Length: 325
Ligand SMILES: Cc1cc2nc3c(=O)[nH]c(=O)nc-3n(C[C@H](O)[C@H](O)[C@H](O)COP(=O)(O)OP(=O)(O)OC[C@H]3O[C@@H](n4cnc5c(N)ncnc54)[C@H](O)[C@@H]3O)c2cc1C
Image (cartoon, rainbow, N blue to C red; front, side):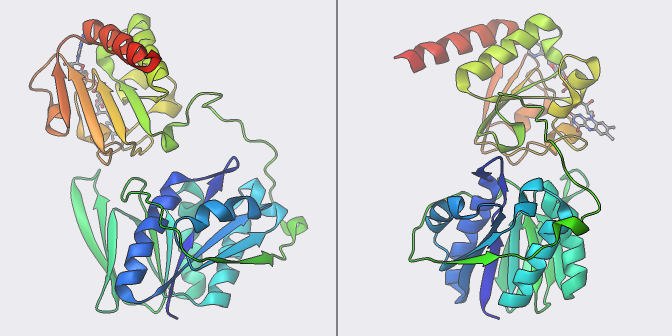
């Protein structure tokens, strides 16, 4: 009854950065509130992640093992997390707001009669309650939500906190999770990543996003060259995905992906609120736009007013030269 449990999500053999952000913040939260910090990883081979998780300071890691966890099906995750809650009885379960967590958090809350606060930008424990702020209405409004349930489930938007290592003495408990795969009504046979061998947009540290200002294939090439020089993922505004220059899977915004990289380039993007809803959490925003009054400059850390067709080749060349030296 006195612990914070953090569910650490994994994908393609890697821990999700957003989970480490939540774990780092919960380390601080647990110390401030005299609670213990525990972490759980659910995977076919969870042992491969425990060293990395330990470096973020939980006192205990539950390594929950079953081949069903590798198929990304919600029912396996729901059963796994549910049995952990029954076993550990934590005060708070905190998770990164991943697609899988979005799928199961409501059912998990209903099953355990818990307070559920999904998709928060920040949260804290005050006077025994969990208080959180959630961006709503395309992030135009911050809603304050509070729960004083015995168990509270919180999912946290990516980029809300920094991932900071803080090693501590950690014990690992391996749980051979008994889950009847044969009972599954659906099976996942194959995952085809739209990112291919390119950097995955939702986990990228650097994103180069293209707007209508790129106009055509020539502009598209300039975006790809800049992204390539930085090892960045490419994103796009809806104007560009609708024009067919980039696939819909790269759209960032209210009806696209939400990203929170360390560095976000908005190139030829005006800064409509529906786009900003998907990238406002980026740490450093660089806007390149020929219109000095474009709304994107209100969100930018650095602004370059000028023609992207002149700026991008120079920028890419400088970055390549710098990297080569
Ligand atoms: C319900 C709803 C949901 C939506 N969801 C999304 C969403 O998820 N994501 C999203 O992006 N949009 C979304 N939109 C659309 C959104 O409202 C905007 O229309 C869209 O974001 C505009 O894209 P843009 O900034 O690329 O284009 P524009 O607004 O046309 O801006 C183009 C910019 O490029 C600049 N420019 C032009 N040429 C150059 C040049 N040579 N050099 C430098 N700068 C140049 C211009 O000054 C301008 O600021 C949604 C809209 C609705 C109604």
